Length: 486
Image 1 (cartoon, rainbow, N blue to C red):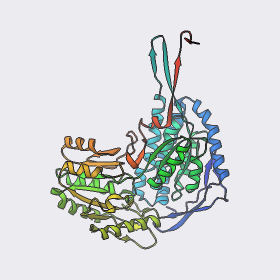
Image 2 (image 1 turned 60 degrees about the horizontal axis):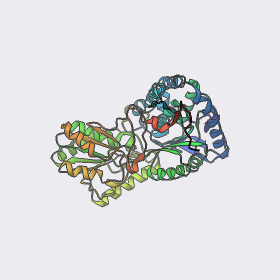
Image 3 (image 1 turned 135 degrees about the vertical axis):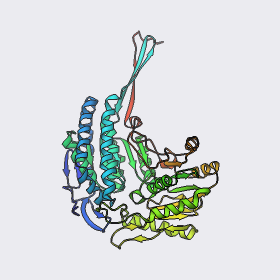
Image 4 (image 1 turned 135 degrees about the horizontal axis):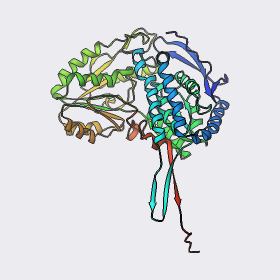
């Protein structure tokens, strides 16, 4: 896997690569070595204008196509992504530092799943007829228009597809701004869309930091904003979008509870906790980073958790045997190390990890477990976004539900128990938008994904996306004379 990942140009606008070196440079760093592997330039006002103008122009004709015609193009794009999964996964690994064994199965392939799903769903989206005696009303589902997608750095390919698939399937155009930390992968998706037959202008990629996002979000031609990111970023984007009364989907952060009852399968519960904390080096918004373990199983759980954690193979993410790679950046590593030090000072008991791993070139963090964490500690309240697990203990169901819900976040939650009646009862009481029973972090495109409270608004994926990328037009049909009192 070569370390040279320089794209043809920084942006993809109106069906072709576009460069404007007047924009501020952005260096792309390979997290495993700290090496610069590419440079792109931030979008200038002229690039932003070209993207929005082409999207506005292309969207009108796209919306007039039969849904099945749009679906054929998305299906071809999905097929191309699957054919090129190896090269796309390698680029994702260079862009993010995630292990190749992970990107091969979790990134481009899930993007293809989204395109396939919404290609199949698009022709089924219809209105309804409402009889009113002599008269009737009919409704039509119409696209919103130009949508802006703002991506996060942990799943650049997947997020681009999760947002563009429903947008395009239902007749919208999209201008997408990837994270400035991982700007490379979405350009390849834009290439594939054009090769699959998508008309130019319908999916544009512009690079940049927050100022570029702000310019897109506040443009009067934009009807919808979909963001995946942190709560602080979400607050800013939500407020800007509100100025123009724009449709908004926000998929933000979390501090999700994973509850393990003492009748749970020990191996499955430990496996769920590992997946919910160390996959993608812990850089997953839905991670179950507050692991509540019932006291009867706590000692055995911690023993097995420690053994399996210390067997995780850290290494070069290009190596197929590597199970966990580096964090995405030096800044993120510093934030995680600071959270670990704060947990030590607060009195949490370190079980394993807690240190920077590898040489000082890459941004590696040893998978870390703290036990005896209390609800008032920062480690139990604040999102870390790294491989740091907080284990808390509890006595009974009522207690753990109250403590699990005592958070400003509400993205996800998990329950491990052999008692399915209890599992459903607990899930019903948890304040979270996405829940799992005896599993964790499985996010098929067929299921809605999103949170409550500060974890966001709206849902991605599934049929729920229809509500977030279309609007209803109601038409009253009168068959009689107009009865006017004037």
